[in-house]
Length: 214
Image (cartoon, rainbow, N blue to C red; front, side, top):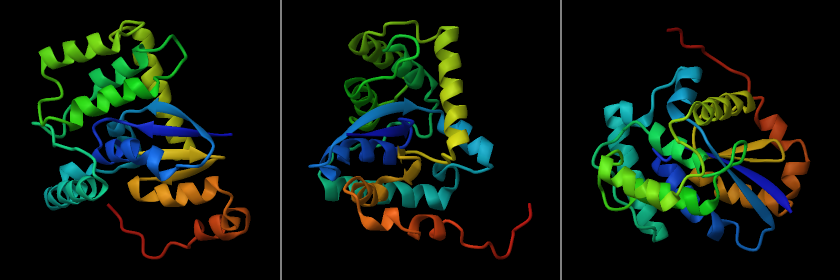
């Protein structure tokens, strides 16, 4: 049985859709998922990028495209009342759901994803956050220093692995980024010969051309 690391931040609609679609996309495969919360803004800051919601034409396209993806996959989805928003409370709650050093389970991640992406409400509205916390029943204080340090460490670990966006799913040291990478991930899990040959490494070594300077 293979282990998958699912790096996510519930702020991402693609992370939500990939989370929902993963069981169907990998049906028949033998795998275990470790859900690893990371701060998407921290990834963006490290790699010097803007999020898709921070560039207005890209923002409009992103939400049209994810709405279509949700429709085509039959996944309920409603954009939260405010986006982007600060996801720290949700990420810390996810980690606080488990003992120190452990990771949240799928039920907890599902509660977070549905909190954000179903109903169209404000993800940080205090009464909603309180109800979510009661449903999660955290084992530790989400505002505690230990939980905050764990989130920083996970984000730093993601950067060290080369994670530049969410969702990113790691299998055998390879990263598969985004909802549309799920078929590729399935092929790797099922032992597609392409992954055993030179194709993966060779494709990642495309030589750069013109370099844009800031």
